[in-house]
Length: 526
Image (tube, rainbow, N blue to C red):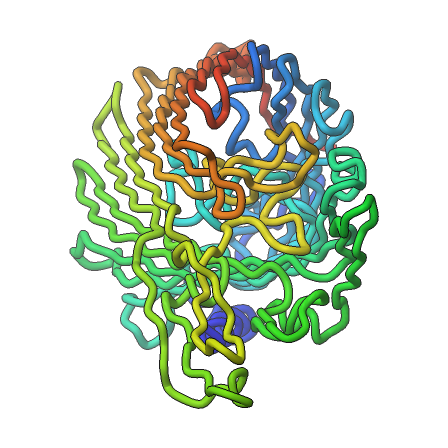
């Protein structure tokens, strides 16, 4: 893992700084557009009306700009200068502001995006909050990535990235690399105070770290319809101050590390949490996914198969745990080369088919998600009387002193992990992280100005190891959504999107509701 992280960072610097990164850029020609000319703008109005909570697929995977309230909505406006405006030049700049005035939300005014970014050759540095798409998945039809999804509000951060695949020199066009490294800060402190009443676990001033690297083997310049993409995504919550109930209405307060060593331990997992003494894990809430996608493309269709293997700590990351401790006075000392192998059970397996000449049906996505194992139901640390170590009960998306993999109550990864915003008890906790789910997504475009998508999900949940359901609960969530883009001269840039969703079952309850969005896009010159 350490070698992988260092390799990703090294190659990103090489692509940004050295001449090798300039491959693919022609000699600069023409006049550079002024940075305040032809800005892209979006203005929209959305309203949602439901019976019960907002149905899952009307609420989820919208970068956190959503609400569970029966009646909610917003007026939204955005202005952006994308980096592609300078695509013909060695360096480029971009910026954007995206805000909403909302009702029925956790905030009346939402600064959804606010960022500036610069590019030199292939490397990009971004400062601020920006929505990023999922990697290696269909962003419209997938249930969501397990680590870096599109379900929660963006985190303000400083991010260095190779956002598009860069061809590694001397590989004859067959090996490509992209990735990012980022550090930021969570912004939901006030929401946590209100949601918990400061009586349940919460954390202030928490820092955020993410990194990812992706390799692609394939060559578009020769006749080879196959390609393979592999990646590692890792996220960490660290720093800040954690407040954990101690009983009797009191709170234990843990001051987490915020110095350079804490940043290093987030980048290369190490150290230990503030509440740990004899038994230590890596510092912070460390998690991630191993990812792989196999692609086949021809002129008629594309077929893709992918895997997203989520892990919450090193035992589920490598499916392997050290178990070679000594005996007697050496019960806590590593003495032997002995390891415990865990079962390979927790996966997201997906398939996507793109019918390139399709009209009514163009894209099909099917996913199977299983998270019930989590390194097994037993956790036992070595003791003087029993030196065996079993690192089970990983408790995906939850953590002992941090509020887990969530932001503003919505999980940062896949929304089939029941987000804390659903909880009625004021606890910031993912109460259903052991489940099996089947997900189907369909999309098409019957005409040039009409498109649609259909989502349907079946889920069987067991709760968590710490708080299991008394019996298995099931849930069915469906949504139909259609978009009409006006193409008349007077209505150019206008579109209307209508969606209807339903939930049935014991995990999310019985809900149904409708959503309508009116959007206007265009160019603006200042």
